[in-house]
Image (cartoon, rainbow, N blue to C red; front, side, top):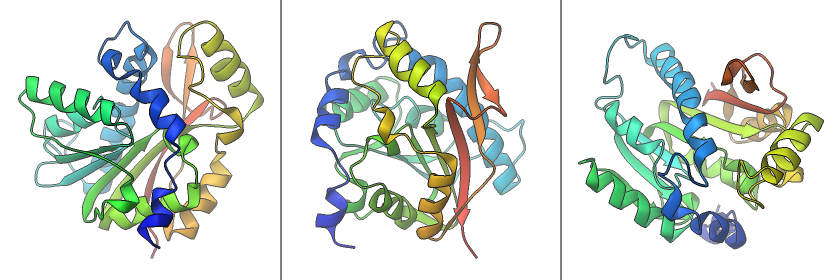
Amino acid sequence: MSNATMSATIRPEEAAHFGKLAAEWWDPKGSSAMLHKLNPVRLGFIRAAIDAHWGTDSRGVRPLLGKRALDVGCGAGLLCEPLARLGAAVTGVDAAEENIAAASAHAAGGGLAIDYRCGDVGALGLAGFDLVTSMEVIEHVADKAAFVAALAAALAPGGLMILSTPNRTAQSRLLLVEGAERLGMVPRGTHHWDDFVTPDELRELLSAAGLVMGEPQGIAWSPTKGLHLSSDLALNYICGVTAGS
């Protein structure tokens, strides 16, 4: 697949939308407040998936030591930094230059050496990553099949991929789009319900790229638990992915 085709996965209007939020990305009370609540839930799943995939000790603090990790659609680095602290040599890719600038500055301030790059993952020629993550990104790309193919090309043999995305259901339309955006919990224009991907659709996209999707877990919300991992996939889900045999 040519770089020109891969580059078509970026929607300029989406990059511009998220780039405008760059200055507040690390503010837990700013426009990305929901991401700060979501990140620990994602990390809980990611850590369990790492331990299961590589047989690492769940009590160890650096299970990714000696491994390379790639986060695609990294924003200002909310996931890249924890992955670096888990021991990985981390590369973060984002379509918005403003996000990459904010991510680089924040990592430098924390003494973390993270390789941040602006551009389309398929056009950057990245490969050989033990762990590839992409959180809440596939719903924002122009060509989902090309995007998944680019993620697959970046994954090393025997590697692990972890993806999360909103599900396209009546509940997600009501709560994530109409509710959360109207109430100001997420910035207006962040979600486009028609672009959400169901688990069956994601499984087909991954299969076409030679990948196998594991059993997804839902990311649900309740008044007592807040955001948490659940068997309920109605709003959002996260899954591990491996290369097919």
